[in-house]
Length: 227
Image 1 (cartoon, rainbow, N blue to C red):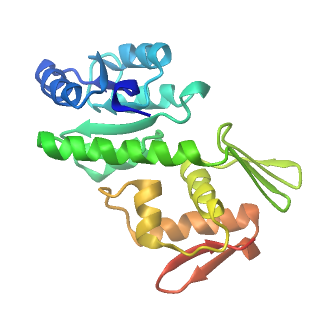
Image 2 (cartoon, rainbow, N blue to C red):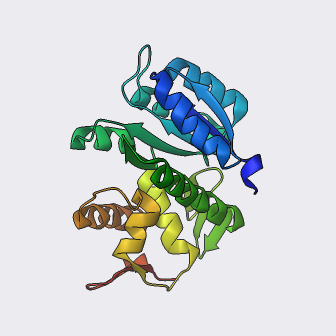
């Protein structure tokens, strides 16, 4: 997918941010769509189906957290990457953002070159997802990445977004040991401060739902899915 084919929805209530960030991303060849509040963001996301949404948290009418939650309810936007762009760096804002379904978090002000680098990094994840098989079958376990659906022995298993992404990553290459740093980067984003315990907690929950025997801990390195 070329830059000219990629739509980025930029959402912020500050006109200067829309102008400056939009200008820099347009120069890279991306199609830029803008909105200045959460209500408009949801409507434009549904209409335009962007590959990436850069979303401010503090906005009038509907804040970024609520907008993100609403966007994540739109099935055709399941694969859209959402990153928050906000001056608020408090831990609770980050946690709320990820709980709402965000993929990453960028703190402003941010230098244009760093922003462009970050956007390209986020879009690489999208390209990686494009070449992956949409449905993975390992024994009696079936993972449908497009439908965000997991079944085991023909029974549906409900997984929160991050658990699904972690399972999807580990099962993309059964037997491969994924280092903790790689897991954090691909599931939580490489600029996100997440404690190592976060991975352990999610693995524990997956073991409870999928089966303890399916996941192997490689001490001091990471985890792998045993096929």
